[in-house]
Image (cartoon, rainbow, N blue to C red):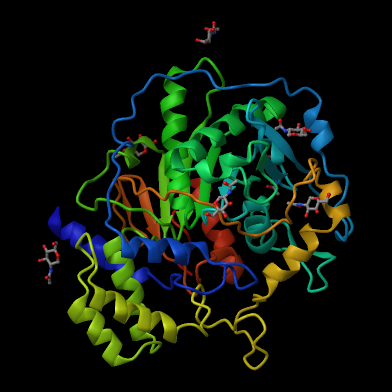
Length: 458
Ligand SMILES: *[C@@H]1O[C@H](CO)[C@@H](O)[C@H](O)[C@H]1NC(C)=O
Ligand SMILES: *[C@@H]1O[C@H](CO)[C@@H](O)[C@H](O)[C@H]1NC(C)=O
Ligand SMILES: *[C@@H]1O[C@H](CO)[C@@H](O)[C@H](O)[C@H]1NC(C)=O
Ligand SMILES: *[C@@H]1O[C@H](CO)[C@@H](O)[C@H](O)[C@H]1NC(C)=O
Ligand SMILES: *[C@@H]1O[C@H](CO)[C@@H](O)[C@H](O)[C@H]1NC(C)=O
Ligand SMILES: *[C@@H]1O[C@H](CO)[C@@H](O)[C@H](O)[C@H]1NC(C)=O
Ligand SMILES: *[C@@H]1O[C@H](CO)[C@@H](O)[C@H](O)[C@H]1NC(C)=O
């Protein structure tokens, strides 16, 4: 066991390509929530919440509203600036998850162009916390359309994941993107537990609206801080499936990329073996290996000096509950040196830097185009979004107080090696946002995942 554990830890370290400290969110105009999270975490004592382990609490029926006619109302006729001849159906709108507070979550759903009635249903979640799964996940990463640099027209994404499945993008929790609450104090009262409960209520109601998907194979996927959302929602679904007399969700697998999770690497299996299969790619597995691996990565890629690296190695013990002041000073020095680097993808230029052409096809200013597009009133109308005239613009990531909780997840990773139905995959040349930087490999990975196979090796 210890040998295997060592190997897993080592491989996780190797695969940490680049993680965030302080570049702007997604290269564009917004803040970087993951940076904030990591920095906040390195300044405070780390506690691990074990509630996931002993969650055998009673199921109480969730709020379900009649959904008749709402599917038809949510159908998108056509998005402004969309290329002609969409060969698939798309829907978007709101699902109320708490009628008393007036809390409603916004979704965007794209069916598969071919054989959608036999393809699985996949929920995609972006992280943050506070980042929009629609603006980032669908419009920048794996959805069927990308926004042109004019901020008004769309182009097809050849490698969209709806080629392989019917994809549901959920803006979660309330306060993110177009999702809202009429009780605005809700925004600062989120947390992993309520996020999971609201997402579950959303799903049960959404399946009433789209009943043909009730018994469909269902997969949960996400990225970054969704390393919290995905397993916690999966846990809640499995637990409720046992007791509910409401819809049983046919969960078949989970996957998350470059995830933030905190784990006890010493324990094996008990969480994962309830799934048919689970994938974790490039995971931010825990604070110790994550932070150590990140700064090692910067040094081995010549982004920080030997002196700073030595200072970190001599003064930082990432296994202790508190990092010392000297250690934090070295980490701050490293962070300052990286301010011109897009650390989600270190070889990409920053948006606005004209001198260095991108070596990937990805445009680092994408999030600016998306921001323009999604704030056009006719676009919002076509999407059935912002129906209550929210008093702020749509943002790719919004900042509110979100107590970021650590939780205990029993996992083990291996380099494209399956351990007890959990597979750890590294995608070559991918930064934090795999479908943006490596679209073809991203889609190949996703198709393999749905079939329960290892991705092709080239
Ligand atoms: C929030 O309030 C607006 C305005 O009163 C109302 O139209 C909307 O239905 C409410 N949302 C929810 C989810 O109850
Ligand atoms: C759609 O399903 C039919 C019948 O199963 C199959 O013959 C066909 O190859 C499928 N098409 C695609 C594009 O998957
Ligand atoms: C939520 O927290 C943010 C950041 O602390 C603060 O600016 C905002 O006023 C709070 N919002 C509400 C509705 O309490
Ligand atoms: C489902 O559970 C609710 C709440 O416990 C109960 O009122 C209802 O009768 C149950 N329905 C069935 C069909 O068992
Ligand atoms: C792996 O998944 C299969 C298929 O769901 C299941 O039968 C098997 O028990 C799982 N293995 C472990 C170790 O959990
Ligand atoms: C780092 O801290 C851990 C936990 O306090 C301790 O067990 C370990 O010996 C320390 N490592 C070094 C190199 O000091
Ligand atoms: C919602 O619409 C109002 C105008 O009615 C606009 O000012 C606001 O920026 C929009 N908010 C979002 C989140 O789209």
